[in-house]
Image 1 (cartoon, one colour):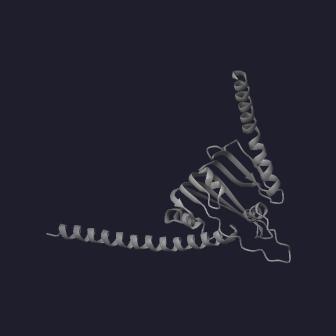
Image 2: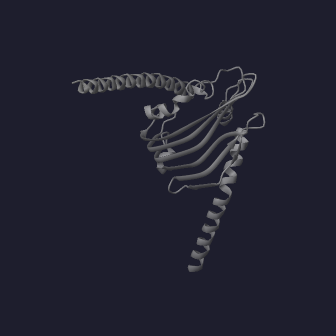
Image 3: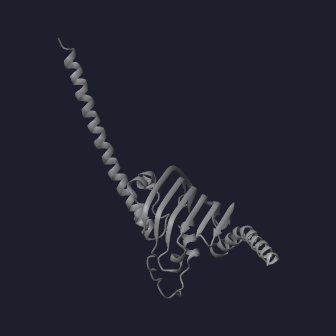
Length: 252
């Protein structure tokens, strides 16, 4: 019995080692095969018993059809899920942490973007060419605690005579609670960090969320400008009152 136990422990350890060694290779190869975007991962650990996922150093690069190779660089992605909820139509996550170093959005001469190509290849429609694609039902989920960090955004546009590259240091670091819809991410703090890209982001992010994000950023940018003007006027009025009071005190 003791020998059998030792053999089982050794077998389990060997399987765990194989799992850890080959899981990143399987993940990147499947992602490459399905999307056409090359991918590398520093480390990837998935514990099916605890529902935890930890991914570090994910780098996605564009296919050779794009003149620019950079796409997404993720420092860390970690999540913890309630195991039994994964078997339902509404998965529940106790926490999700997303730490993004860089995102490069590229628009080709024909108007195609790398974000749209990745989204289309990742979830291709099953309808034939003669049938319009049906809108998929919204996915239900719940994240009790979500942390998003996003350092830098690069936008490359090849639609003009010369390619235009713009870099935006965003410095976004936002925490959320009880997230069940992507629109909950569009809080004022996050939108203000994205306000500098409001004029150039349109058309680079596909889908309804992209349009909603662009409209929300523009609205926040306008309201933020009005707010700053109001603060400036108020500060100017206070400064004028202070100077007038000093002048009156100086008079004999």
